[in-house]
Amino acid sequence: MTWQIFSKKFREKFGDIIEGRITQIWEKNWKESLVSYPALGTGNTDIKKVFQMTVEGENEIKNVAEQFLDFPPDTRVYEIAKYVNERTTYKTDPERFGKAEFWADPYSVWKEKEDDCDGFAVLIASLCWNAGIPRERLKVVAGNIIYPSGVVGGHAYCLYLKERD
Image (cartoon, one colour):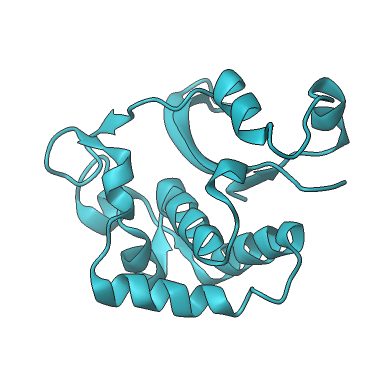
């Protein structure tokens, strides 16, 4: 899955998390930084631009997000992640776009029902934010990982700070 939910261990380590301090703690421990990547296939791009959609795309993502509004926040994030993972087929960027790396906007991922890890992450994040999950509780993380085979590659996922255990 492309999501991670913090649990009791996180809260034990950061026991001073109380309402009003969440943003401060996140910014101290996970500083926001410019992630410049060949995301849109047009040279290095600030990843935040991936979230810019057409009016049609924004409206459709908002409409999809509405189905999750009745869930409490923690369950809402889980249900959105589950929805995206069940609905979307994993397909590499070379297979889908003919490029080594391409970050599609959330609406394109939703509409085409396929993408790689970054597509899953941006769609989950966009649906969560449009379903009322505060931005300070959800981040998109991107970086390199070492696969079990020893190969180094990129990976992206959502990181969510739970409201409760």
